[in-house]
Image 1 (cartoon, rainbow, N blue to C red):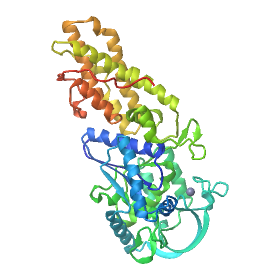
Image 2 (image 1 turned 180 degrees about the horizontal axis):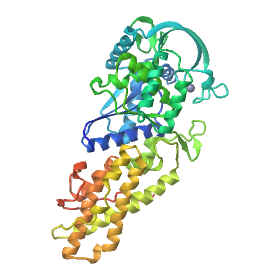
Image 3 (image 1 turned 180 degrees about the vertical axis):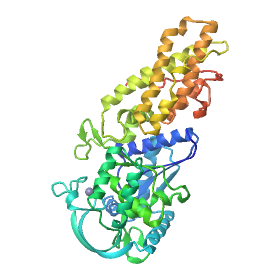
Image 4 (image 1 turned 120 degrees about the vertical axis):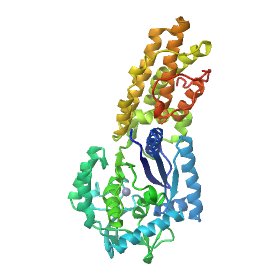
Length: 479
Ligand SMILES: [Zn+2]
């Protein structure tokens, strides 16, 4: 893999939301990709954070009975941060849009676009969904309601500042057509193309002044519309790192991240992100996740029950990345008992049990290396076919199990046993590197039992085995 930089982002989540399995999914995948590229030797930067300037924040504070909105956001931010910690997420920066560094970046960005003549004052009259914090057109509605929130948008008429998005629509379209990887997966690309072709209007980017939000640098009677403000987080955290290699998002916010963000960046004179990847939505046991159905899955609770690594594995393995998927506890259990316990856990247990009893020198001829197809795994990861990458890793794990069955090391001794152990221990060392991005804790535990340091991609080849294996706790238990 070529060295270079890898800057990955998740959307910044609404601070007043409660983290659910959907948020966890995006953030876990971002964490996996960040760890993967770091092992590849890339200068990696993983950014996530919170969108705090929304009107929904004010409502959330009110609902929580807190008069001090800042205090409310601090309290909620703690919850998000502790969720990511529980899920083994290691981001490089966590941006909150109430931070001064962000506000300053937003004002600078606004000024650049304004100086270009692409912001003007006008009258807006139309539909607005409070929960989306977005203007909707009649064509967006389903039965007169917001397609995402199933609530009726309100009709508003306001004096607002507008961004000349229409001026950039053709340029964004051209960019999409010239860069086939800009919008992924390909199915989503066509959706955006036809949206642009149906006509893009200028958008209102200010709201009448409230006590919350970022004031317009040119008019204190207005605050900046929260989407215009939020998108800029990708630059405000680390301006020197721009452009992002990939924005990971849910499919519901694809237009914002391609058409609007694309136009904004062009107007302010920035490069566009290299790729925007929109993943699908979750159902739970085949049903739409909703508070009323009571089937909202708390990612922290479920990871406490089954283990963080098992959840990370399940989410990345079960759902073809980019498509809609279903969360099912039964399937989760099946995967834990199957791939994790019988394939991986058993292999580690069997090999270490024999290795600790062996007193000779562990050495031999690489016989298992030919089954290791790292190029194939790397290829899948490069194309964000994460579930296929895991499949390819598991092919190797299963091959190692087959090797144990064939060699029957418990019947061997001397040189033959040494050679068999050499092959299996080296394979386990390499497996620990391959699974680390997905299951960092499990990878570390395998390294602990092998008595080796976790390697990087440069260490994915058979060489001298240098550890002194020791028995550890079982990696997984039957659930
Ligand atoms: Zn809505």
